[in-house]
Image 1 (cartoon, rainbow, N blue to C red):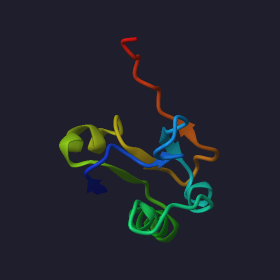
Image 2: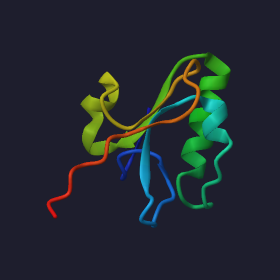
Image 3: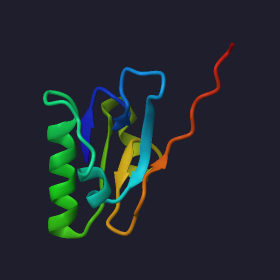
Length: 94
């Protein structure tokens, strides 16, 4: 588990297309490019862990530790997962 200040790994961060990855396989996640100084070190560590152990990994918010442990939050890297499963977007008020 990697606890950080954001609730998971996002694609297209800082754009109107931003979306959080809920579940993905390590090979698929490793194919994405993240700016250095961002999630890249966390992503690389999680991918390496899953590849080396065959066990799952999760990246998410320090404030959601219980949900991360139960698999209900963050970005889960699972060896058998293939293509990314995106998190549901929260409904906007407007």
